[in-house]
Length: 419
Image 1 (cartoon, rainbow, N blue to C red):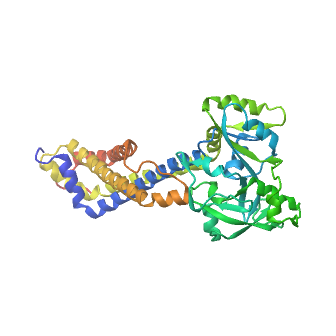
Image 2 (cartoon, rainbow, N blue to C red):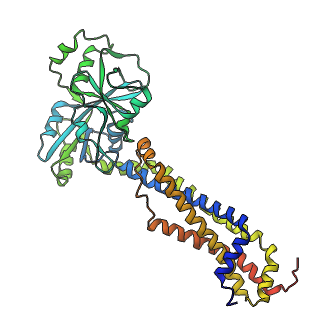
Image 3 (tube, rainbow, N blue to C red):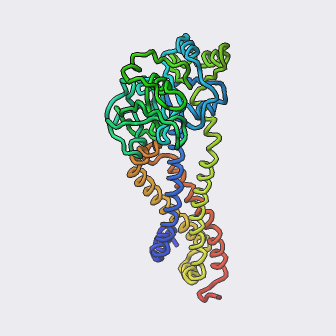
């Protein structure tokens, strides 16, 4: 048997059944591709989710749950339980250790997209991903009372360009019966796509929010021109929430405690990273389910190898008998079938890994631009090698069943096969 090494025999045997072997390899490759793709996108989605907002040390709003505050202030889901008075905002903004603050005011919309009242500092301080700042595709931040900046999805879905006018509506629903149309806003900037709720936002100045609400609840108009409104003191009485940047993160817990025990009104300060982790714990069930489904797909690929080996056993009994006649021992027969199973799995896993990285490399820019999912390093690593190893070893283990059957047959069969 020294003239017939097991690996050489296994390769020749696979080559002799090239059609079946190719289909089996392709099945394993597709299953491994799906599993690795799901894993890469899953980890990228979680990292991007947790970095929806970065560089912000605290978010302060009216007292509610941490997740609710995060949802309406960052993800624009739901509504605030209450507003914060301007005096309270100023008190926290001037507290020791605070480097900067960015106020936001919510409650209006434009054709289903949330309107965010804020200051030009928003475009300098808001970061996402790995400390990535907002960039403009065209235009610049608003510098006039009735100027506005729109997110990438707003521009894409509504076909807006610089210079077009936007009418803000009262409320956050997709349909509103009260529009603040006496002074429309002019688009002066369009942001690059971020894959975050910023893409679905229309940004105006805090003073503009005050100005349009001078019209009253009916939206009938205040009767004042834009020039007259600009001359007025439009400092807001209240805001919805605000982002806080600190001189050093060390003071975060101290300031959080001060805000949470603020005596003048019920406020709450949350650390974005902690709240994001809590939120992911709620929505992460779907992600884990998807990973489990992908794992079962890999198992299906391995079962296809087992099926291919089992169905070929009866056809190969004469082959095994001839090998015995040439000096092969029953253990060699066992090792041959195990090696075939492992070889098919190894080839499929390697091909699947190649498919995964080729596809992710090709589509990574589009995935990031459209969904904001920043995929991890697009080069194979230890995790991928571990998956290849696990698939190969698992296939060898599954192949041990048919190999044991062939081993038993080889003990009983001679040159004439009993069928």
